Each structure stands twice: as C-alpha cells, then as structure tokens.
Length: 178
Image 1: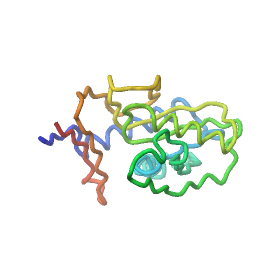
Image 2: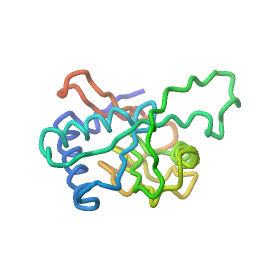
Image 3: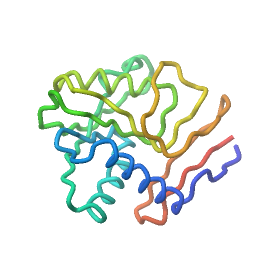
C-alpha cells in the first residue's frame, strides 16, 4: 500500500483554529453547549480544540466530556475480536443542552449513530451537531452529515485514512493509504 500525506501539522493547526471560530459563531456564549469527544480517537481532536480555546479565547468557559459508545455499536459481539470499551466521563446533565459530538474521521456513519444512541442514556439534548477532522465522502451507509468538518476527501474501496496525533504539536498528520 502506498501512503500519502493528506494534511500536515500546519494544515491541521489551521483547520482546528477554523473549527473553533465556527463553533464560536454558532454557539457564542457556550452556556448551554457541551463538546463531547468520542472514544477512542475523537478525544484527541477535542483536546486540540480545548487547547485553542484556553490559549486564544480565555473568556469562553467550555464544558467538555468524553463518551464511549462501544455497547451501542451494531457490531458489538459480532466479530471474533473482543472490543474493549474506554471510559466515559459524562458526569453532568445534558438535558436540553446543545451537544457537539467530535470525532476524527466520518466514514460510514455507524459510529456516530451509536454515539447518538448512547447519548440518550444521559438525557435528552436540545440538539446534536457533529464535528470531524476528515469527512470521507461517498462511503456513507447511514444518512449522517457533519456540521463542521476540516476536510472532505473522496476515497475508493480499500483506502484507509489515518489521523496520527503526535505528542508534540508539529507531529500531527493525516495519511491516506491506497
């Protein structure tokens, strides 16, 4: 398989700053908004977003949590490989809140459907939006669309998109393998 860089760390940094600005435009005061990073990979994007808020927009108090939706997946206990759940830390009421689910890659939509089903366990939100770094178009199996996205890419069957979050800011990269 051939590996090609789709986004380098500078491009990812610009995208994350743009996504934060879009959130500010749509949620202004964030009093009723909760950002939720989806386990296992969406939490890294959430951390980057919270970092931008804390450095550039210190007047914004952002409520954020992590969510594991393992037990709501439609493939849970269907394969030979055991799926190990991560921890969720939703210790607040999301009743009547605006929820923004955050993940790294939107592909078939099944993970997002599972996440939305698991959200019901914590209350009934006012609205749910979706933010992703990469939107893989043309492969959706469910009618799910991102409200906020960093980049849309066209992929073919067999392509693999990998988001690598480095320990240092300058080590973030998005690859496609064909």
